[in-house]
Image (cartoon, rainbow, N blue to C red; front, side):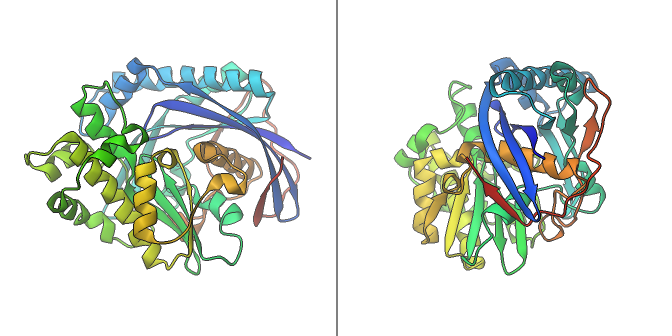
Length: 383
């Protein structure tokens, strides 16, 4: 029996909410996934500003949190309803929500907060909604991140090639089999680049489009050495991080008043990400790297990673999922697992193995499946 699930993702760049729909059918330990399609709903400048105002190092008040939680819930509800109208009905909606804080102290994740009240999504679609995905993993002693390891383990790392799976969003994370599966956040991908561009241009530009600024700029080696000395990079996995560490104050401390042009700063931050990725590739003795996320669209970053890592790079498109939609389709997989009472995290990745999320009922009484499935071992993408 198949189930259709919509997965929603609004990442650390908070420029749009992506809604992907997939149909799942399980046969033994093989889970078949048919991607139906994805639609994106852009976040308005006012919404992006409201999110940015809540993020560290800014201070806020509980009224602003309440208003943003509601407005994001309404936006997600409209996006989900629009996707259902375009791509067809679903049995479950999975909403990651908008991360505004990920609380980590002394290597331990103590809490996490994703806004976007699921009640508005359930009301807009009439469908049950799975949300608050990361908290249960943290409650069991895990990091709550990165969640991509479960998809990587079934789809990308399922053969004998010594392969890594890299996601380049606001934060870069990697999954490897070394020999057991390991996944962790490497550090910033677009987070600091986007911040530098947005601040320097007064918001007229929000990112280094096509890597053009990094391509024009020159790397400041002294600044790069200072950035690479960040203690987080030396911590062993499991570990997770976010904009709570890599924020505006952090960037200001690293630059420390030194005169540097925007293009040179972006080139240096691009090199930072490339060196972090290449270091992980060498550490885990990878023979191949599969890449997804928004960073795939940055040719300067991709070229530097390939040059430094010295191994072939492939897009996750070759495995059947669009690179820009991996995280949204990841949400559909997590939803399938949670709906069937199966763990969505692996202890070797986040530090815990947990069934994820909380379910908000839809229009009809909530009925979970009566039959159980074994934990899938392999994910097969079908057309």
